Image (cartoon, rainbow, N blue to C red):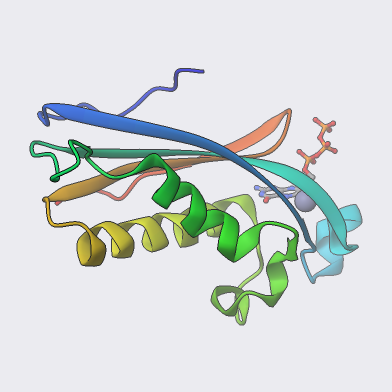
Length: 137
Ligand SMILES: Nc1nc2c(c(=O)[nH]1)N=C([C@H](O)[C@H](O)COP(=O)(O)OP(=O)(O)OP(=O)(O)O)CN2
Ligand SMILES: [Zn+2]
């Protein structure tokens, strides 16, 4: 599947799609049925860009991005994750949490200079969110 990505001048743009199964609830009765614990097959699209490749010829290993997200959320209750100690696990907040995880990983684990441009998080067949920082550094 192809998604809209922000305009940029990087030579390479990588996209990784992945799915994970998880439960969540929005702990507020105003969320209606979503205040009850329920599950989704989440779909995530991660966009990373850069001008230089690492020694393997990768921007970043696709499987490293997948592992990062799967380890944190697959077959878990998202509310239990420390990032959601004080905020509800909505599509909006989860897309930002995933953005921050990917950004931290590529800044600390990759030798090449990479940027995460956006995260698309699909919670249901009819609902998804795009998270993009105001500007990429
Ligand atoms: N802005 C948001 N609204 C809602 C979120 C969210 O994360 N951000 N989450 C939920 C529920 O958790 C749940 O995912 C229901 O979403 P919804 O699109 O309403 O699901 P349906 O399958 O019922 O959608 P239909 O298109 O009506 O079948 C709710 N809102
Ligand atoms: Zn839900």
